[in-house]
Figure 1 (tube, rainbow over the protein chains, first blue to last red):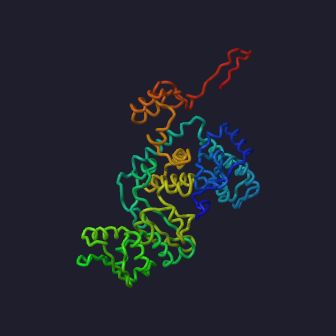
Figure 2: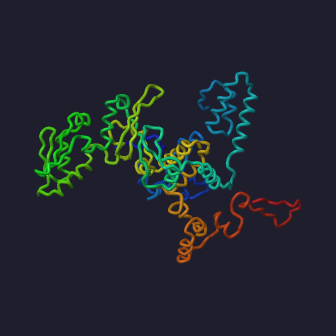
Amino acid sequence: MVDVSQHELVPEHTVLEDDVLEGVLSEYDIDRTDLPKIKRTDAALPDDAEAGDVVKIVRNSRTTDQAIIYRLVVE
Amino acid sequence: MTEVSYDVTDDMIAVVEDTDLPRRLKNNVYETLEARDDISIEDADAIAKAVEARYLDTRVDPLDPVGTVSAQSIGEPGTQLTMNTFHYAGVAEIDVTQGLPRLIELVDARKTPDTPMMTVYLEDEYATERERAHEVVWNLEATKILALGDVSTNVADMRVQISLNEDTLKERMITPEEVASIIEDNLGVSTIQQGTEIQFGPEEPSYRDLLQLVEELRDITFKGIEDISRVVIRREELEDGEEFVLYTEGSAFGDALEIEGVDASRTTCNNIHEIHRNLGIEAAREAIIEETNNTLAEQGLDDVNVRHLMLVADMMTNRGEIESIGRHGISGSKESVLARAAFEVTVNHLLNAAIHGEVDDLDGVTENVIVGKPIKLGTGDVDLRMGSTSSGSGSSQAD
């Protein structure tokens, strides 16, 4: 099986801890359902991610050095 | 302190790092400082501050209609895109759709592009030796019977006769026995194989069945991937040496990544759905930006700011799957009935909304333009609230 995370188009995905998530949500003043979504079947998702988790994605941005975004895992 | 690889003093680093600039701009400032020898720390500070002020100035203001600005910024140059569907692209004489049709194909999120193609990078010795690169080519390119030998029909004996070309077989690494067994599996006939000669025929003598068998024989893929009709090898210059890169007509991204010798970290294709399926939504977003950007750049319209394309890609991938812009995608899934009706097929939307008793909260832009209320953007979303009781100096509060 090919290791998807090694592909240059795929940024790093990590599952966010609950307490860190609270900080993120209060910083932006949003609910977790307001976040962009990612399917649970997504090829780049870490194995331990379940629906309802939030993943942190560190993109190599074209406009700054690194951009951090969050996606909610959905069915 | 962050690592800085520029030849500047520690004081200057402190001054620049203190600003609220992204890394890339900081590096640009360092380059400028490095290029000027006789620069004082005050000058450096002034430069850094000026860049920071300009940077903060150019950021998007709250309530700025970024979507509208993006639409216009892509739309206007879009009028200059070529409307010609085809012509040969720069790389490897492979036909790829360009210009407006390609841009439409991307934002419509078509399931398969008009001209699917892959760029296959190779690993280690496969990338440097032509023979090894060819091994990958034979595993990719669909090999049909006509590429392996001659087919003739013997009507008198009701037999199909194939005489295989030994050199071609050796080159493509396939044996006559394999060819015979593939034919048996696919056509359900028993074959007689002797050396490079293979023959078979229909069970009952029938002229029609015989011709039918020949037709089916031509469609069998003996080696490689069915969807890939042609592969072109190109030698490309690198900073250190050169490497072989394969360009394919037709794409099968998932299958291609599994093939030995294929560099699964760089190989790409121009079908955003295949990228989504195999690499996930984030890679698809990246591919949409890359493809739209390249399409515009190809036509000399590379001055479209990449932020607009990033916004489009963000919208298309927001729900975890690729959605098209337009009636069947993003515009069609808007909350507001009036906004949907204003876009396309007005009557259908209004009728369905009436049947289902939908309510429009008038939160968006389009709805408010239709009913003639101020839109909630820019100054339209700012209310001024006056204090109801005057407390001596008559203070007022902006909300």
